[in-house]
Amino acid sequence: MNTILLAVILVSAIGLISGLGLAIASKVMAVPVDEKAEKIRECLPGANCGACGFSGCDGYAAALSGGETTDTTLCAPGGKETSLKIAEVSGLEAGDVEPMTAVVLCQGNRHNSVDKLVYSGVESCRMAAQVFGGPKACIYGCVGFGDCVKACPFGAISLCDGIARVNPALCRACRACVNTCPKGIIDMLPLTKPKAAVLCANHEKGAQTRKQCKAGCIGCMKCVKVCEVGAVSVTNFCAKVDYDKCTGCGKCTEVCPVKSIDLLDMKRFEAYRAI
Image (cartoon, rainbow, N blue to C red):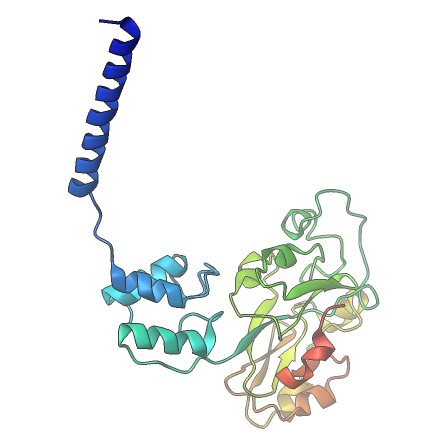
């Protein structure tokens, strides 16, 4: 028999046997497909941000399908629309998703804050923060190199005059920026009603804070005294607002001598659009 013909026959036989083996293996070792989970997955936006508390959209879909959770409101980026879609596919009850936005609790821009050193290195907030807390005199504020900008999958954050600013109209509350910020100064704020927010995280005494930033909270307690619902407290010389209690009256913003408290509302998002 021709040597070339024999080689062709052998190769073809090996290919045929291998193909049959793979076909049999695909049937025997096949992983059952959860069709319900796949349908739920199609309802999700695909951000894979983990804000739902599961390992991305696939994990959340599997949890809903398998009964690990019945809460259809955990997808913050998808909002109420996604909750309704999930409920339709899964038969679970749809719930209300409160609109949220990320807020950078810092006003330490180039006009308000001062630098204590000249940083020369990798332009990363996390890296710069390891060098004496960062280049700014205030070790609690925004470093300003934009780690949160890079982490945001929706383009809702940009740098403005040396600090990060969030555009609430684009923010989908995925919390990627919250998990990325090495200073922990990005918070989630509800948007259904106006809420007061302390745009500062400095815990130094008032006199020291003033040396570091013109807009830093000095812990004067005026906001605490004027709040009628007990939504404002001061801990370690820095005010904090309980958003659940805050009624958005704006009295704390009026009495703040350094204007470190502002009343944030979705209707005013243009004022916080980073330029």
